[in-house]
Amino acid sequence: EPEVTQTPSHQVTQMGQEVILRCVPISNHLYFYWYRQILGQKVEFLVSFYNNEISEKSEIFDDQFSVERPDGSNFTLKIRSTKLEDSAMYFCASSEGPPSRSSYNEQFFGPGTRLTVL
Amino acid sequence: DQQVKQNSPSLSVQEGRISILNCDYTNSMFDYFLWYKKYPAEGPTFLISISSIKDKNEDGRFTVFLNKSAKHLSLHIVPSQPGDSAVYFCAASGTGNQFYFGTGTSLTVIP
Image (tube, rainbow over all chains, first blue to last red):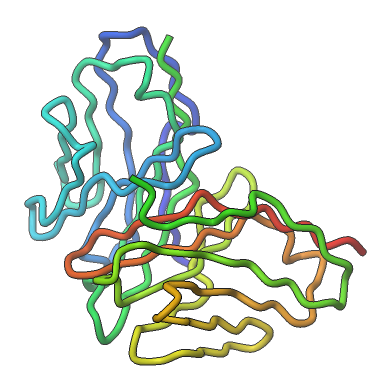
């Protein structure tokens, strides 16, 4: 069964460093997403991506974040200068089509990358 | 800004009984609601959804009820099985692609 994969499973970094979290979405999916979950808190939407551009982003997704689909298979989230409060589990998801009011294209989630900023 | 709330962080139920997980939302523009299940060390997996034109959607042992006037939805699992033990998130969406998640309820089904 196709699945979304994410690497690494755990990333430890120093505050101020750049990190890149990698995701390989399901191959025939066209819509890609990043979410994060700070320990003990809700899952928060960060950004959605379609046709090589951001289609929607939340207020969390500020200038320190960027996303890219560099090679047609990987989907990356870059955090330019990490802060302590960026420590969280980051989930990538993909779907065949966009969510809509009349039908929902299921978002398949990866297992997550745990980011620890020291 | 907690637009979707799951006020019970945990719930324990005997195997075979009904599990009822609750979710409240504040934004009257939300018109699509989902439940996700999450096992440890895995990403959330989609369980069941409901649009605001319905008040009930059923899929096997899982039924989601929507009360629009109360801005409340619930997930019923009947009968509960030990394999249902997981964290359950409800999520809501209005226009756009953004889903708002609750903080999750950890369900334990006791054999």
